[in-house]
Structure formats: C-alpha cells, structure tokens
Length: 379
Ligand code: P1T
Image (cartoon, rainbow, N blue to C red; front, side, top):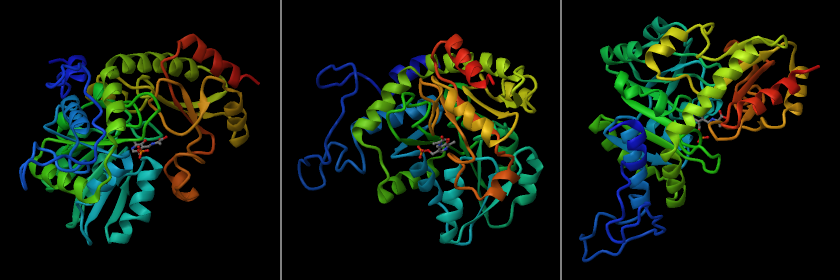
C-alpha cells in the first residue's frame, strides 16, 4: 500500500459493532471484565485504549515500522525512551536539537547519573570519537531544530550498530511522508505529533515507532508504568490529522521552497537555511535520504535583535508563536523562545545567533505569504 492509502486506512478499519467509518473516541477509563482475569483485551485506559491503539497502528505503518506507541507530548515520548538508560550510562547527541530536549538531558536526565556529550552534526566522524564504553544511545534530529542541518542516518546507523548502541532519530521536522529513518537503519523514531502529524495546532502529543521487538516490549512496559499517555480525544485528533498528512506536506514544501528562493535573494536577509536550496551545505544528502525538504526555513536577518523585533512585529499571517507543522504559518525567535533554555554561550556556540528567525511555512496561498514577508522586511 502506498503512503497516502496507509494514512487513511491502516489501523482504521470500520468499527465492527456499528460500521462507523471513523474510529470512535472511546471515552472510558476502564473496561468490564467477564470474570477475574477474563477480558476483551482492554483492562484500563492507561494500559490500552482502542482509539489510542488505532493511532499507534497508523503511526507504525507510516514509518514502515512494526510497533507504534503514542504519548502525551513529544517530550513524554523522549522521556520514556531515555528511561531505558541507567545510572552510569552515556548518550551522544547531535548539538543542534530542540531546546526542550537539551533541557531534559541537562536538567533531568543528568540527575539520574546519565550524561550526554554533544557532537557537531556537520562532522559524522566526531560521533565515533565521542563514543565511550558506557555509551548506550545516540540521539539526533534531522533536519535539526532550528538550523535545519542534515545528518547521514544510514552512516550513523552503521556506527551505532558496530558499537551496539541504540540510534534514535527525532523525525518531527521531516514527518514520515518525507523521511523514514527506520528504513535507513535507525532503531527508534520519535515524533512530536503536536507538529506535522497532528497538523492543526490543536493538540500536544508524541510518538515512538520501532521494529525492534525487545525495545518495543520495554517501551510498551514503560508507557504503562510511567503513564505519559495521550487522551482518547487527542489520539483521535492526531489520527484525523494523519489522514491528510501527504497532501499537507506537499503544500508545506511547495510554499517553503518558493519562499526560501525569495528570501535567499532578499537584501535584508544575511543567510538562509533550507535543505531544498542547492546552496544548503547538505543539499545532496537531503536529496538522497529524504523524498522532500519539508516546510521549515530559518534565516538570519541583516542586523541584530532590533531588526528581528521589527520583522516579527510587522508580519500579519506569520504569527509569532512557538511550535510548527500546523496549517497556519508561524514565526519563532529561537534565542528567546524554543531555545531559550540554552545558556547564551551554549546557544551561540551552536550557531543560534541573535538575528536568527525560524519560519514554519503553512499551507496558505504562496502569494499572500510572500507579500506578508516582503512587507515585514521593508524598511
Ligand atoms: O512540544 P512537544 O510535543 O513535547 O515536543 C517536543 C519536541 C520534540 N522534538 C522536536 C524536534 C521538537 O521540535 C519539539 C517541540 N518543538 C517546539 C515546540 C518548537 O517550536 O520547536
């Protein structure tokens, strides 16, 4: 089955009892048991819920994986994965990643006695050098948040396999429509479903997909034991979002490419980051491992914070807000918003400058979005 068909049908067969074409929202916390120890597969909704199960099946199908798990947020999914580690373990992470993931690693996971080394995403051999005898996990995003760097997943999967290390890829920015890390050798894929999978900026959610049965069994146990699960209603909203993922992603990308080309030529723009532009450092790699370049653009404006402030104040369609991946266009200032939890020195070391702006390009008409940016960039 092709991606578009899976998105509409996998895990979403008509309800056997009523024929309802759409998976019902099972608003129940518990299930009657026929006798002690005898039930219909459901005991308690933290452990399992039919609406969530439908979402989990759909998620697995989209990533071409065997098992899916849904969570209350992207960070809930991340925390559950990181719970696989024990005191004394070590993580190697790409240095460009969501500020909240960095905060979790440095302010929470470090307290468990699990440390993280950050490696420059541009130098894959540095990952090899950073591996220690106690390294258990490699964590990357590609494209990265917010600099949209690309890392060779297959090459990194080889390094991970040779060293018996789990490779986790946060696939939030690409979505499974444009990139499927498990096919390239990653062990676990994680998503903030808040973004493209949900697609309408109306829920917070997370997902994990893997084809490794042992990892799945552990994570399934932790999903129930830790309890960071999504509600049936939120599960249903993500499931509904998924149905239109393919058509939305095509529109996000079409608009983003045109806007990136426009911005690259604009005199007020100092630098542009979009993997779909031939000028992007890893454009060829992006072409190889992704089937499209996505809807995220970052840019550095000529000038500093003052110019960014005025730009953000002038856009009307690009709303100043955290998050991404919804149908509406958003503008974010990473230094103070998504990456505000990084100490300034760490932020600057990673190349997140004071004049960096991130755009989540929505699916409005391109000409309106271009006019909005053109107006905001005018002196
Ligand atoms: O917000 P939450 O659903 O918990 O997802 C966390 C998360 C994980 N991974 C990536 C790549 C992310 O971008 C995020 C959340 N990011 C934003 C809110 C943002 O504006 O970048």
